[in-house]
Length: 216
Image 1: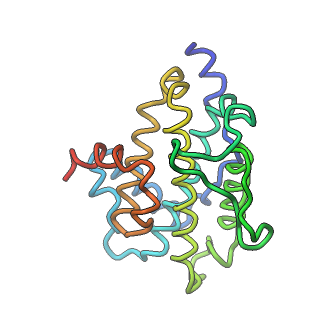
Image 2: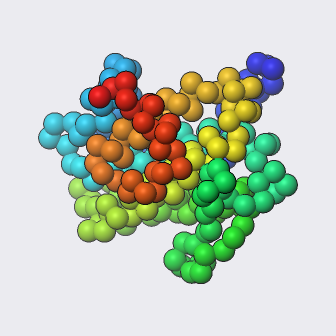
């Protein structure tokens, strides 16, 4: 089974979003990776001294997009129109897609279609230089935080879907530790800066309590 996984571990669902090397954002990303290595996630997510909050949120949002992209990429074979005719996170939560521009009225669709819409939409936001400026000295827009919050709220739904509907293949593929570490980092980050409403996190409330209780 391991060889099978090795051959597709590099598969991402959408192309990876790269942060240009040598840029300040790249330095921030490297800082984030180094502090994550220390094992203390509460410390790792804190705004580094003297840094701009918008930029810190931007770099981490890109990183979470890439992580979820990879995690979902490993289980796309299991998330199909047949297995997941609706986008759900357990029996109590179902998501309908709307992006406010192309699709204004929420539509009910399968999970693979929903996640495709969602990741394409996030990608478009991340590629928009007026929203996520990559050049030094270009200011972030005034509405940046609300855009970032919407992105993170939606990315959470992919974690929730994977945990609720596809946890067995995650275990078979030996991706459980990877998924838990990624999600724990995500939760600590959004909690630190109050980026996702508690109500939105409800589908994984028990897991969140379990993952965060050891680090209080």
